[in-house]
Length: 212
Image 1 (cartoon, rainbow, N blue to C red):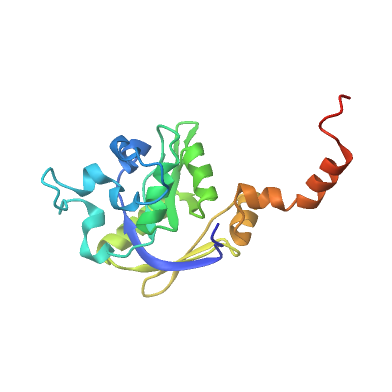
Image 2 (image 1 turned 120 degrees about the horizontal axis):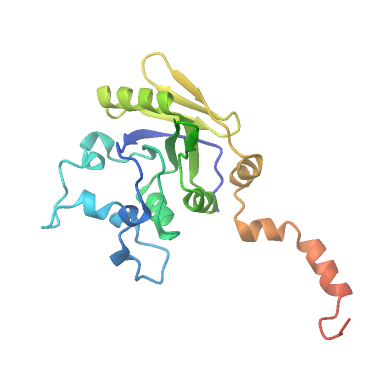
């Protein structure tokens, strides 16, 4: 898995809440047995018209967002089915960071990301950042007025720097175990291999053919 420490890139916005995984990567593109080729189909139903041409009304098709690697969305992003293909599509399109807000509805906190989607992001070296709703709104407004603006994400410091005239800084929290995995570039196999000696010692001491 690719190490994630700092990243700078163009910020693109998708002003939609409750974006489910079928919208991120529609079901007709799940037939492949490979883990490649999903980026071109990210948000396919929204990105393309019926004739196959790009939809000029869809935000990610704006020329200012070409090459964007930081995506800012609304709350509950990645809800729906648990397909990891959704994260593959996000990553293969070029996004390394996804930012979303948590919000309060009465006494209930609406999540920034669906849990399974968020966990799948960790496994694919995509950093999910949760900010307060008002902070994400500021980013939306600044990007709207200055399309093509860039930001830098520093995972070690847990800071999001928006490079607009006077730099704006947003602090975020990351689970320590997630932070460690991303900084070290460890997927599930990599985590297991950290215990390779202990596993080997256990297998040496325990003969699987002996009933105990």
